[in-house]
Amino acid sequence: MSSTSLSTRRVLIVMPALNEQASVGAVIAHVKQSLPGMDVLVVDDGSKDRTSALARAAGAEVARLSVNLGVGGAMRTGFRYAVARGYDVVVQVDADGQHDPDEVGALLQALDEGADIAIGSRFAGKGAYKASGPRKYAMVVLSLVFSRLAGRKLSDVTSGFKAMGPRAIRLFAAYYPAEYLGDTVESLVMAIRAKLTIAEIPVVMRERAGGTPSHSPVKSAVYLGRAGLALLLALVRRRPSVDSSDAA
Image (cartoon, rainbow, N blue to C red; front, side, top):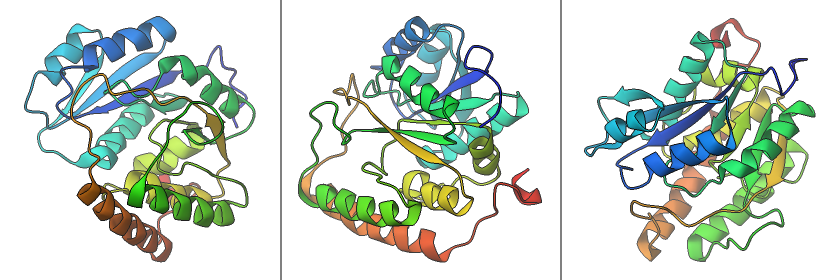
């Protein structure tokens, strides 16, 4: 990666948030306690509640989208914010409290050791998180496919808990997929094609601190189908490389 050390690297915590007023303030407080000196940007993805106001009150910068673009659109906003303000690292942390800020240090260490992207994996031997039903089958298939594409074991390709260095930020600011699952599935295909180095770090996934979980038998079945379509689309679609002028 770059020669910038952990102590001097500018790190931006980006939190996509949709109607997370029940948890966003507490999550920001935990981040500021665990990660002093790191800036926090909450991207309010068209919330109808007090997410933006509570995020500002907790000390975060807020970018408010007028319409809901999904996690991909929110993160693209975060990457462009990071490029415009000269950040070296972007860490994606969910606003619902499932991602533990105390684990961010391990992700940053992976970047310091040469990774361009460090994924917090729920299935790499730490914690007791388990998927079930169609969602589990989708994750197994995606793991097998991506492990083959990347040439290394990747157990949790749909994790939203990630740290990304300068090369990844530059690529994703130019185009970060906004389609459903594009922010995980297609973005990893883009990263692999751009020859970015991807590492996985074992993390513990916590219970949501607020909001409504998206799991149900019907939604899980829909997830399975959409995951397959997202992967197919990612494999056939071409995106600019990290070194192209389009990604600058």
